[in-house]
Length: 128
Image (cartoon, helix red, strand yellow):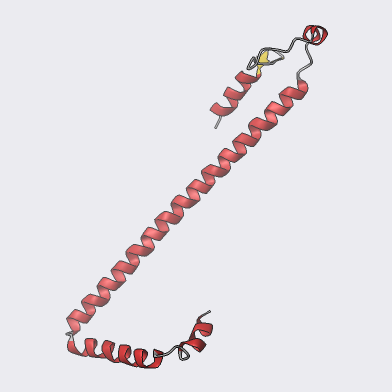
């Protein structure tokens, strides 16, 4: 990418004059400032660069934690769905409800071997 930009920079109108003036300006600033000022400016630039790098590292750590938490949440939801599918497949159809065409009440837990889906779901959620 840099070589591509480098090959086009001299095709931009006025680039050569700007680059020459900019190089001369930098040389002039270095020449007119004391060595202590130049060292101070360099130290300040390095400190600012390091601070930005630390901030980027912190943001990267946070992003990794968020991604990890999201993955755990996604795994938990998938486990819950798998558990619910297993419980639904294992639950025998209630003979009385089938004979009378009576559907169980909405939101009522389906009994499976003495445990309800709700209890299994709560246990699974508490395990995370």
